Each structure stands twice: as structure tokens, then as C-alpha cells.
Image 1: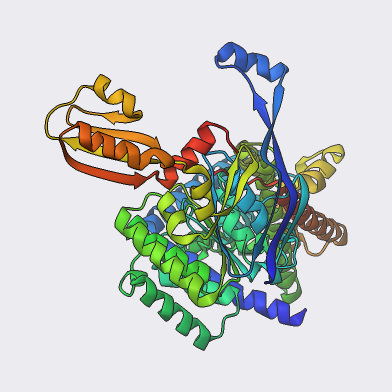
Image 2: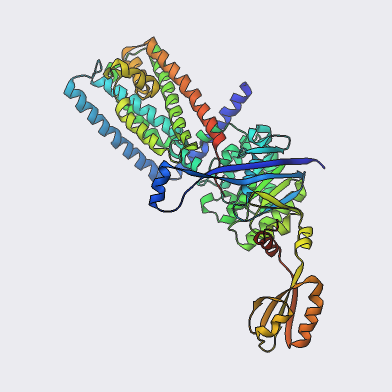
Length: 266
Length: 327
């Protein structure tokens, strides 16, 4: 097991070099990507500021707390997509056009090999700096303690795992449905609404929907909550539960789909 | 000799949605769908020995690629048995995948924006190939395929032929025991086709790799395969040597005459079946037993400038087999 882990980690380090080298061939893309993502985040931030200033606060969340929520959400979204860009961008097309053939014929886990095919974290570093800068500006709302900081990072990691699992599940639908791209559009739409606001805005009956069933509301909320209000074991338990369920669910659905994969005619 | 591929009553069926053309039919099909069962591969059986080079021939949609995909583990068979190197391919056991390779003329596994040698290095990592062995194999393949300067070029800047050569290197770095080639020479010019054929032949001779080839180019099959499997509509019609196939089906020869003076077609018709006619040139198809009699008669009756007697081409034999549904 340890040997296998070492093998996969060493392969991963080698693997991510290639998409990075590929992406670095196009310098203009990095500049335009940074510019557009900064513009997009700024517009969102202005919108949030206007809303919070209008109402004073949203639930118990003041403007700085809302900025932390927004910054954490943007970090999760950007980092996950940058690390798993292939899953985000290409799964549907690759399944439809039969491009998984070479992944299936390599003696390495197919989902692992496919997920690591793209890696644009390096190009997105300037964009990822923006949420970090926002956290600095909202520092008055942050509980400064090493334990909370570690908890925040663990929670961010779990949220990224959940988000990755969701995009794997949505991409895998293409094994059954010819074009499942619109599911990702819905996900993105949901992100812009559910992930940018704290769970406090939902009535009790809606909480399981946005925190567990479609856990978009949990992704930015959980880490931000820990950072602003401290540890909450119920919220932590929900996040651990959702991470486990969605991770296993993604692997299960992907493997089911692979059995259904019919490649494409030559 | 060890049998590395054993296939028994193998079938793969697809359920295909069928409808007539037009918007009205499209709307109707939303509420009521008719499906058709397409038997892409239907109850085929064959065995292949270690080191054998087998050609799969058939028209488009015959079931060649589907068979290849079941043998490599990409597709799950609807029914039947398939055993490659002692494994059920679809299980995709890593030990099995380490011993097979698939080259597809119409698909690309190389990193598009990077030099080909970067893909080779990644494959080295996947297959845990020691440095020494990797360098030796890659250098040997580079030399055999004559791509020393090309492997450092970005894949997207390569010609199709150069890219295919690099695809071959990527597929052979780990020395697979079984190699599946799906239209590897498609789209290449004749010079490049010939070079690749020579390489494949040499590789098979040197490493005793079992190779299954599908190709539309009969030259590939003629030059490389001792054994051919002819498949049409999912069924095997012939499995044996090319030589026997030619003997069995090529029961006539072609005689082409170039005349000194123009000759009318009606004057030539009594001598045999005319395949092609021009005023100064004619081609007949004549049964092998009559060829010398007909040839001497023609030479006696007409002023002939040139004469040529040839075998019917393998392409023509296969075309006739499919057209007449002889299989």
C-alpha cells in the first residue's frame, strides 16, 4: 500500500509537469486569464458590498465576514478547477468522442490519470492571490489561532474534494446522456447564489438541501464559519460526512460509467 | 506454439435509435422510439499464436475495430469468451495492460503542445521502465523510424507521418507482447506508408510480437500479414493464409492488349469478358484455364503492340467477395 502511494505521488509530481509546460507555451493566455478573473471577482465583490451595506448584515455575517466567505469560495472554486481543469473542461467531450481510450489502456488508475491530465495552478496563481489579499483586508474578523488556521485549511481541502467529486459526477453523466454540459452550467449558477451567502439565510427545511444533498452551500460556508466563529462540531461532522459520501459516490459513478463507455467508431 | 489470443463465440451488439428523416419524425421520436439491434460483431471465434501477424480485412462497419476494442479491453462483449495472454481484457488488470498496446491511426496519445519525447518520459514513469532500458529502447526505435530530429519538435508542428512514427514509439517503449494496430497508415502518403510497413515488419521479426492489424490499404495486409481474417457484417467469412485466399478466389486472370490500329468493341466481345475498353486498348478477365488459348487467338487475330497478363489484385478479390456475399 505504502509502495503504491509512493508510486502515485511520484507519478503525480511527474504528471503535473506536462500540462504546466503545455500551458506555459501560451503567455498571452495567462495574462488574459488573470485579467478576466480579477474583473469577475471585483464585480462580484462590489455586488456583495452593495447588498451588505443595504441590509447592515446578512444573518450574523457583517461585511468583513461576507468578504471572508467570498474569498474562501473563490479560492475553492479557482484552486479546484486549476488542479482538475481536465475534469472541469473536457470530461463530457472526451466521453462523447471516445477520447478515454488511451487512459483506459494504461496500467494506472483511470480516474487519477484522467484527473491529472490538466494542471493550470501555476498560471492561476495571480488569480489565486486575490482571495488571499481579501482575507488580509478582512483580518479583523478572523480568529487568530494555530488550531483554527489548521481547521480552516482542512475544511478548505474537504470543500475542494467535495467540489471535485461533484464535477466528476456531473461529467460522468455523459456516459449515459450525450450532452451533460448544462449540468455544469447549473452548478455554476448555483455557485453564484448558494456559495456566496451564509447558511443562515436558509430556513431549516432548506438546510439539508444546500448543505448535504446539493452541498454547494457548504463549500465556502464551512471553512469561513470556522475562521470567523470558531469550531462547530456539528458543521464539521456534516462536512466530513459529505466529503466521504461524495468522494465514494464520484468513484462509484465514474466506475459504473466506464463499464458503459462504448468508445467511438474509428 | 502458445496461443496468446483465444476468442470463442464473441459478440457485441449495440441498440441503435432508428428514425426516418425530417423534423416531424424527430418530434415523433421524442414520444415513440424505435430501436434496432446492430450486431457489430456476431459470434466470431478464432485463435492467434504468439508472434503471429494477422490482418483483419473488411469494409467500413464490418466489425474490425469493435473486435479490436474487445480484445484490448475497451469494450465489454455482449456474449462469448475472450482471452488475451490469459486475461479477460475488460478487467483491465495492470499486468495485462503492461503487455498490450493499441495504435490508432485516427487518435493521438501524445501531448499536443510538447515535444514527443516528453510523452515518452511520462510513459516511462507509468510503466516503471528503468533508465537504462528506456534509453536503449527509445534510441533503438528512434533509429529504426528515423526520427532523431523530430522527437524534439512540438507534436502540433509535426506532419501526420512524423506524428504516427512518434505514436509508434510511445506505444512500443515498454515492449508489449501483443500489439493492436487500427488503421495505422490511414491518411499517410505512399512513401510514409511503406516506411511504416517496413518498420512494423522488422519489429515483428525482431521481437516476435503478436500483431493484429486492421487496414483499408491492402498493401499493408499483403506486405505484412501471413494470415488474414475477413469480416463483414460482424461475421468471419475467411480465416487463413493470403496465398490460399488468392488461389481459392482468383480463378481468372487479366489480359491487357494495346493495338496498333483501333479495334471495335463488338469485334472483341467473343473473346471474353471485357473489363475496360478504349479504341487502342482493352482489358479482359479470362478464366485461368483458358488464358493461353485466348491470348494466342488474340495475338493471331489482331495487330498487337503490347500484351500484359496479370493476376487479379487482392483488393479486387476482397471486393468481389464482399459484393457477391461469398463469405
